[in-house]
Length: 443
Image (tube, rainbow, N blue to C red; front, side):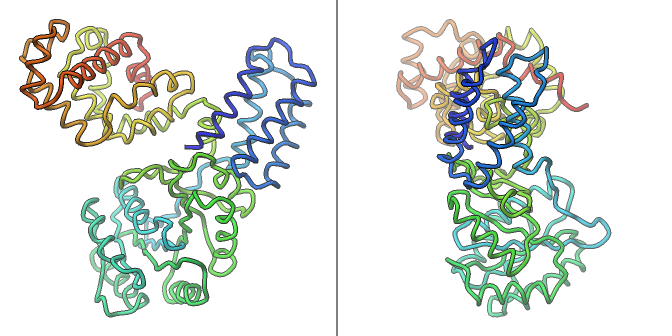
């Protein structure tokens, strides 16, 4: 997420971080580099201008803290301004606990609206709500089928209605269905177009005039660049928007849309899509995104992912010396499965501080994020004896050849797995693993 911008900031701040004193020329040079980095990241030029003005003003006025170096102080100021531009605080969806809440998702075709509808429904379900998905896209072929399949995977009920009926009739029937069967959130997947046209606008207006919509969320593709601002303003002016869900942010290396939206529309980004899985939707926290951009990591989000995948007693055991010292291949396989539940390794590394994640990214390929990679790991470990799994140090050349034959893999793959294991064991022994996060877990 926002890789290019983050790397640029790392380069800029690394030059000034360790300096005992920063001259006026140092500050001016840093400001020029920050300005170029933001423009290259496709941030709107007016947002860049405001950012630089605020940063220069605060750097010149700030009384430097005695506990921070001047470089650290500038990073702190930059973090504050980034957070302000992104929206300062997370804005949640307004869900009325007394009456069913209706959320209307709108957007252009190809923005990921249908998949996002399922991701949002799953997020709300995990937060204790009972959502119902409504297939109101009667334009795009297979949209109803796609929503039904993804909804089934997520364990979310989908109301399709009669496929020959209009979107409005389907939505009205779904509203009655939701009341009858006690769903407290209805999420409407509306039709999109390749571009905004009057037919689309009129249908959305008709929907909002026919039922009470509590939240209208515009789904925007982060890869659109500055076009996303035009689309956002057009939809808001014509239909009215309460906030945004930004999709494909994991693939948007530049990230200019995320930094521009709030300032140019005065509307919040409420969620961000960070992957293709139905679990890859995150609430949008401006302060956390600022930390990621500046290479400070996002420990809170990482902790939330860990808490969702591990029982508390597991985390406490992992924090103990016995677990780290006796870590074996059985434990290794179990941890790979747990980590896989948290999402892609790329996303997990992005939540870690820069100096930490950069040292791990060179082993990203080794861990095999694909399902077939995990199956190969399982086959190799199952081909080992009990003694070999408990004490991998005894696995010599002949044992590796036997394990490869038994698992249907190659000796190179067995070697790679063992290298992965020893790296993770070293990682845990250094107390820089998940155990270091245990004290911060919620009780």
